[in-house]
Length: 390
Image (cartoon, rainbow, N blue to C red; front, side, top):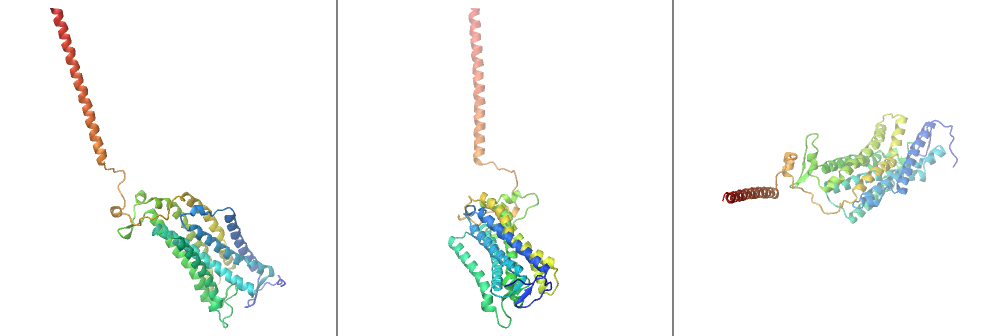
């Protein structure tokens, strides 16, 4: 189909066609380039083996991170489909448009889902200290991707009606869920993204407090411990080997939900303002969309950093059965222990007593020997004098 005239500057919206203004076309190009950057970053991570199974062999993080990067790939591919619209100067409704709408929704939902699953897995592993089997992993992967497919297909196959028109179609400067399905836009995508970002952030904070020692599990219930500033050594007393090994990792993994929330917040605010009928500056929309489509690139940057941390803790056997409860009753009540106060053990006391006894015996032996020597010398001298006198 021939390209639309580039001289058309006014935006003409309809259910079947939309022409770009020069400003819109430039903005869509910027967004598509950001998506391409994410794709290239993910390809680099795969080619350079930045995501290595051996670094995560004792967890299921490898599978979940792989799913997250694949979701980012789908998300970016959906945005890169805009290059076709840029080439022809606008959008036209058809199979390609419907396909883009489905791909974009699948990528966004999958990104939200697997971001949350990474947080949930670490929560089970480090907070609840509950292991996960290989069967559980396979079921999670299958159900997770099945949910993504169902959410995408339920729109055109179940929700779509003839009165409201096509479910996937022209929606702004690209194809997505059309504006006639406003509630579906909110609850079948935005709501899921908000839940993923919010719940994931809370789970990571809980994990961080658990491995740090602020939250302990003693006598069948969780307890919160606080210590004065500058006395963090009191928390380190109660950490086991796994918590100590994973403390640095938990501190850095918390950046995943922080990053996802930071990326999601601008675009969500902009779209909610449009839903409410408020005007949003065009450059604000472009900036928010560009940031959102850099999700894959920024996840790769975090992956390169956290992968090194997991490699350092690769020898920790997470699948071993470990006690989730520790006997810290007194520690929890006092908030810590008194530093540098050492109680002498029975063995040490016995050793000291024996050492003192040996020293006394040695001194007594030395004194007795000296007395006998002096007596002998006196007797000999007297004998010699007596002999000389006679």
